Amino acid sequence: MWKRLDEKIKSGDIILSHNGTKHTADSLDKLLKNIKQKGLEVVTVSDLIYSENYTINHNGTQIKK
Image (cartoon, rainbow, N blue to C red):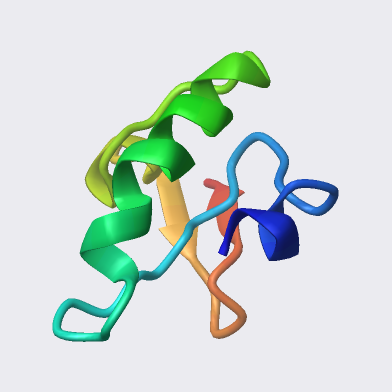
């Protein structure tokens, strides 16, 4: 999983992991450690969404009002 993300991951990206798949739980610890080693912070999706003076368009882009 990390090999697919390593060169692509950047600030603001959302990683969707499906629970119930064979290797998700096994790879989660390594994935989180590697993200943090790149200097990125792991947050919830709700932390990424601006709540005041923004709308979200049909593409999912947040636009300041």
